[in-house]
Image (cartoon, one colour):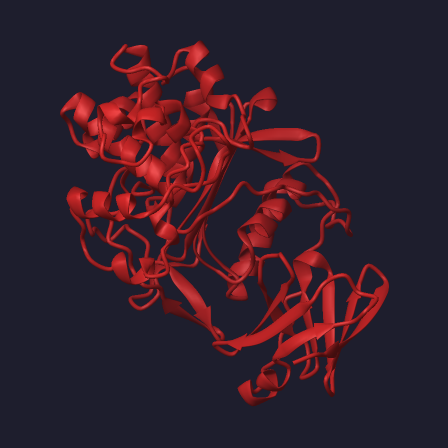
Length: 435
C-alpha cells in the first residue's frame, strides 16, 4: 500500500474554455484529452444530493487483453477503505461493543504501548505504531499471501514512532489492527461486516473484495510511452487499511449516504469528522478554494483514488485511476475548476522523444548561492525525475532535447552544459551542476 497523505485542492486562474459546452462536456473533454495522451486511465462520478449527474470511464481495465473500462469496472481504492473501517468501528461503539477509550491491550496486549493506545488513537493515527508498509522490503513482502500471525509479527517488529497521543503520523498498521478488532468483536470476517453494515445499507452494487473476476481493473505505470503492468500486492495484506474494490458511483453513493445518516447516528458522524492534528477518524478535510470537502485518498499498486464530499451542497465526487501520467490532485483540480465554472485551460502535453543517453547527461544536483533549494535530476525508465530539497519528486515532460516542463506547476527547465535554467511565473533562475 502506498502512503497517501491529505491533498490540497488549489484553484488557479487560467484561460477558460469555449462557452458552448456544458460543464460536463468540458470535464469529459479534459479526461478524454488526458486519456488519449496516455496520462490517465480510470473513472469519475459526480453526484448531486441523491443523483449521479455524471459518470464515465476512460481507457482500459486490462491493457494486454484490450478490455475497456466501463461503469461496472472495479478499482482497488486503497486507503479510502479506511473510511469504511472507521464507519464499522463507530457502529460498534454505538452498539456498546467497545468505546473510543478502549485500549488496544484488550485485543493485542503484546503490541508495544498497547496499554496506552486507545481505539481513538488508532482511528486518528495518533497511536505511534510504526507503519509496516514503510519497510524498505515491503514491495517484496507484499507479493505473497500473509496470515494474521505473519502480519502481526511484521507490525510488532517496528519500534514506536512516538508515545500514544503525543502527535499524529499516518500508519497503515492502525487500520489493519482495526480490521482485526472488527472481526474479533463480531465473530465475522471483515468482508462480511462491510457487506452487511455498509454495502447493503447503502445500496452499493460494485463494492467488495477481489475475486479475480473480469470486471476488476489491473493497474499500470508508464514506461516510456507505453503502459506497463504494475506489481500486484496480495490482498490478504491491506485488510482494513486498503483491501476494498469499488467503482466511482458506488463511492459517491457511499459518502453521500454516510453524511445523510444512513450509516451512523448524527453524534457519531460529528465524532468521525472532528479533525485533530490533521486527521479525523478515517477521514480528513480537503479544501478547494473556500469549500471544505471531507473524504480520503488512496493508493495501492499503481491505483490511485480520491473521494470527496462537500456538505453544504451535498456534492460528492470520486475519481479513480489504474494508470496515470498526470497527478491525481492535478486532475481533480481540473475537474472541480470546470464544475465550478472557474477559468481553466488544458495542460500542455506536447512531448518529444529524447534519447536516454541525453537524459543521463542532465543527471546531478543543481544549485546557486541565490537560490534556496537544491534540485536533483535523475533518469528513471527513460524519464527525467526532478526533486527539490524537502519536496516530492515529479516527472519532467520533454518539449525538446534541452527544454522540459512540469505543466501542473507552470514550470520549465532548460539544460545547458553543466547548467540548468528554471523558468516559472515570469522569473528565471540559473543554476549550475554541483555533482
